[in-house]
Length: 460
Image (cartoon, rainbow, N blue to C red; front, side, top):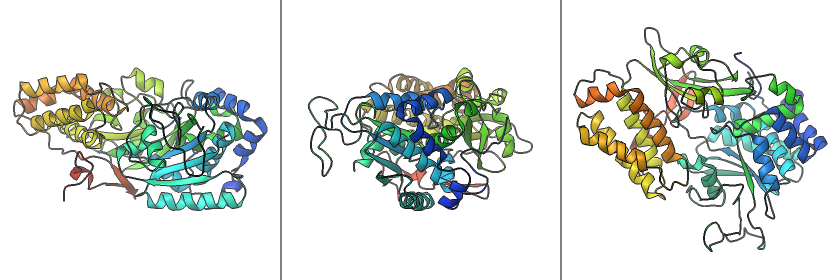
């Protein structure tokens, strides 16, 4: 196990001709030969799981969308990467957008979708340029048939990457998560979501679209699809673990000699990936590794955990999008919790009051403790808000708050005791590792994030 190149080539694929020269297009050809049902069966047999964080099997998702009611179906590529510590989707799009578009074309063919979209942030300049050029090349070459490929540039907000909010942005709205999942209430649906309110039909269409079930897949997930179909399920199953076959594209940032992105076979120990980037630094020890801001930290004794959804779950954490934030023994985990809680607080949309109030209450209590103003009442406030923050939630953000902050409290109680007693001696000050780029091994974090307000505006 170790480094592997399936979706992340050593050298960028510069043109469609270069992609075709290394086998591009074979997956789409195979999907046409198999037909929709057999294509889904092949993906199910391969065991390809979503790489956006949840690890949901793509075959099951596509089967559900294909069998759902509704007049039209859509397929969407979620390229709105915004998870702190993660840069793998942008790296894939820069290196080879053709495989992602081919995967999306296979999705459209399989689902008999009337239209597809690629949604990414307006700030993703290099990625938008590459995707736009690749779509144009593939359209001219006839590789997407009569399929309309829409490229949607959306806002900077974290929730843009939430699949229900993503659909709202494609429809021209703010990134506020809707209630029902895309396979129940998809793009431009005219059926009511709740009560009697229905969506107006899209321009140029008449009523009767009903639910319009929609498949939303992550960049890395779609990039795998052409390779799976071109090489077969058995080949894909020969890589990785029985429950998490294939490869995974990892990002490493934080207390490491350099930041970067690498593709490895699933089942590779986390320690091996950290070693590739010099983590921990010489003379230091790992204190915690976070997979984004969703899951419980892994500690120094858990670094041999294999990279797989089932093994990370067994370790009490989650693989997520494999964006690893490393904290060494200089890091104060109270400070880390305070900074990351604030990220979730300001990114909460406010549609669910327990989420907005709860993430705010948790952040305020953590800020007091980190600043030496904490009391037993601060801990009581934390406990209260952690219990109720996810009440009635329509997206996963408040659950992230519960899982991340609750686990840091349980794993590092001595850090909180030290702050309450005014005795913290760890000098490390945390920042929000929201990546704008990685340049020659140096991470470029968004300097505006710490100035973001809970209403999605910014301090001067």
